[in-house]
Amino acid sequence: MVPQWIIEKKRDGESLAEADIRAFIDGYTRGDIPDYQMSALAMAIYFQGMSTEEVAVLTDAMMRSGELVDTSAITRPKVDKHSTGGIGDKVSLILAPLVACCGVAVPMLSGRGLGITGGTLDKLESIPGYRTDLDIDRFLEVIDTCGCSIIGQTATLAPADKKLYALRDVTGTVPSIPLIAASIMSKKLAEGMDALVLDVKWGSGAFMKTPALATELADTMVRIGTAAGKGMAAIVTDMNQPLGRTAGNALEVVETIETLRGNGPADLVDITLELAAHMLTLTGIAPDIAIARDRLTAALNDGRALDTFKEMVALQGGDCAVIDDPSRLPVAAHQKPCPAPGDGFIGAADAEAIGRACIALGAGRQRVEDRVDHAVGISGILKIGEPVSQGQPMAIIHANSQATLDAARPFMVTAFQVSADPVVPPDLMGKVIT
Ligand code: URA
Image 1: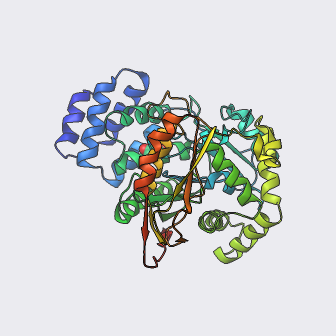
Image 2 (image 1 turned 90 degrees about the horizontal axis):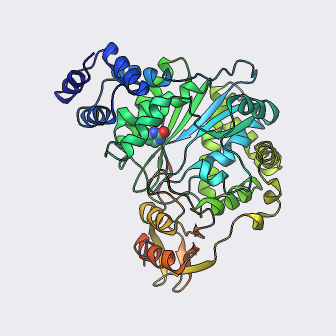
Image 3 (image 1 turned 180 degrees about the vertical axis):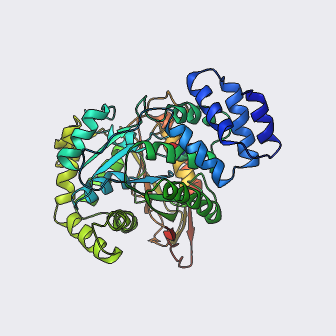
């Protein structure tokens, strides 16, 4: 195999043979193919795309680049959920314990925030002591005990994706449907689940900017998973405004706890119940979505989901006293409201601008090695369509220095629009692909 011939083939719009893709990924994982050749191939794929068959082979090659988790000892159906990433998306923290207490097992390998999108691991690590780096044996023990565990991708799981994702991040090749699909699905298939529900986001705060592109990505991933024998469903959802009313790590944990107490914001509760309902129907735990939603709503309101969350936090070394006393979570030094410029209705609460404000505050990363500040972010975000009066806070900025507060403020000013006329809130959930 001559790597540059494979790069040239893709550059010129030809399909790659299965053997070419496997040899390239094997060579890259071993270190025989350098980053510059992998970057060139990623850019050729970015421009030329890949057929369904090529994406399936790429996914399989990346999945087999490392260890496959053996979950056969877990007798309950195993199901996971993955979001393509957004602002204020704390769904995994609520949904994993919620579905676990309804009878399924959730082996969830999550990611960190990168770019403007937040990451489940960073949110959980704002709980003092919570460990996201469990080894696979402990991961399986936690699932066996409480039904769910949320950890990070280990060094041995889909290592080709780990290397390639970091490379794509610095070579302008992240927003490519074949590369995103193979990246997500290689990790998910390595994790040993029976079924997977995808939340594929579109909008200013997402990688995919239109519903059509999000639908194409959802379709591609559903096909890959179905061909691998997994139960699959994907929901295309709107990420033009943040999910819930907070963005930023500890602030999102506080909102998670509120939601698990049955007091969550409507959009966050609705999307969590819908994704969770598909997890229960795909695994045969509930006969249809309506019955699944009823059972899940009961588990949210009677405290069972909260108890399971508490148990998972404790099993992973976290201070579960934060659940009864969220003031134990990190708190920022400054809280500054963003006042509405006039009376009216919220016309926009732009997810991208709020995500950029979070980065300016230090809640996210600009480079993989950056440390995040768990205390900072935005809370009290008003949603599109809500009434507002002049001077009322549309959001509150939580900052740990005057400099970061000053850096975040301009993004918050551009994020909100106030309309004199009533505004119809957008539909949060679109197409369901199965
Ligand atoms: N999440 C991933 O895991 N991979 C991508 O390529 C994009 C989002």
